[in-house]
Structure formats: C-alpha cells, structure tokens
Length: 266
Image (cartoon, rainbow, N blue to C red; front, side, top):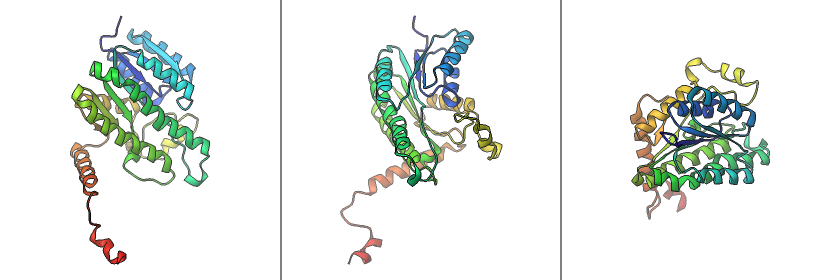
C-alpha cells in the first residue's frame, strides 16, 4: 500500500537536519527511505518513527563517498514509484587551511557534497517529472559568504546553490518544486563529543534548532521558494540578490573591456 502522500527519500539521517526531516515527513504521512552511514542510528530512528506514526520507514545504510554504495542507492531510488520528495542533506565539511587538507578528505567532500547529490538528483528526475514531485538540496550560508578555512566546502555549497536554481527552472514546467535550503548555524551533534561545546561559543540567538529549520524548509516548499533561508526575515533580500546575480551574469558578455582596465592595457 502506498503512503497517502508518497514516499520521501532522505540522506544524512543519522542525526541533526536529516533526522529532523525524517520525523517531520513521517508525521505528515510520508513513507520513508532514510540513508546514512550508521546503520544502528537508522534502525533506531526507523523503529521510533514506525511506532509513533505508523508509516513504513526503510533504512539504507550507505557511504555516499563510495561508488558501489552510491550505485546501490541510485537503484533503490529509481524503484520508488510514488516518490514525492528527495532531500539531499548528506554533506561533509572538514575545516582547515586549504594547504593543510588531506587529499583523501577533499575527494570525499567532493564525492558527497557534489557527486552524490548530483547523481541522486539525476536519478530522481523521471519520478519527479512523472509525479510532479519535489527536491530539496541542502546548501549553506557559505554559498554566499566567503570564510577562511572553508575553501573547498564553500565551493561545494556554491555548486549546490547554482545547480539547484538552474534545475528548478528546468523542472518548473512539470509542476515540480525545487529548493536550495540555506542553513546557518544549526544545532547538530557534528559527529562527536565536541559538538555541544562547539555551539556554546556562539550567542544562543545565532543557533537554530534542526526542527525549526526543517519546518521552515517545508513551509518554503509550499510557498514555492527556490532559495529558502529560514533565518532571513526579509524575503525581498533574497529576490534582490538573485536578480543582481542574474544581471551581473548577463553583463559579462560584451565586446569591449571595462574602462578601468584600459589604462593598464595600452
């Protein structure tokens, strides 16, 4: 029996934002396929949600940086006939000066943040079109703000932003809703005991709870917001920024160079 609201496929569900998406979507009546590396956490979350909501919650333990695991997820995703929503939440973000990053960590970050997100999105397109379904890709505040120690991570999230905005234009004629979700500081366990102390260094008003972030994202999806920034009060700023980016993008194609360069090229 199909879920009354279709099935949602959510990555990065071991904790934090992904787990909050899983809880919110199950409570809204969706069956789920939840993905993360830690099978123990997936089993615990699935059991909790099935007992609480009565929805079917399937687990898919996988490391999205591993090609074989990703291929298995792609197959599983394409088999979901009633796909209603794909949430590409999984991401890696090691901090540090670019020169000090281990190449293995860089490759894993690119594989998860860009490669897996793109491949899963591409695999889902036929179902998205057929079902007029939705896609949420989790970007970041560093999609806009350049910060030290985040060169590769911010680059991957810049890709997520531009990829998602472009895909939204392609899928809009089919009734699909596509969103780039832009979290700021969001309270998660960040994979270790240092997490609690990490968030303590910031004023409480700067740190959002994952449940609030997800609630805003799903509300933004209902409002058909292509770029959802849950903490930004004035939505007009998003529209103005996107229009300015579009205008600059169109202004780069001119025969003549700008006047400020001419004295140095004579």
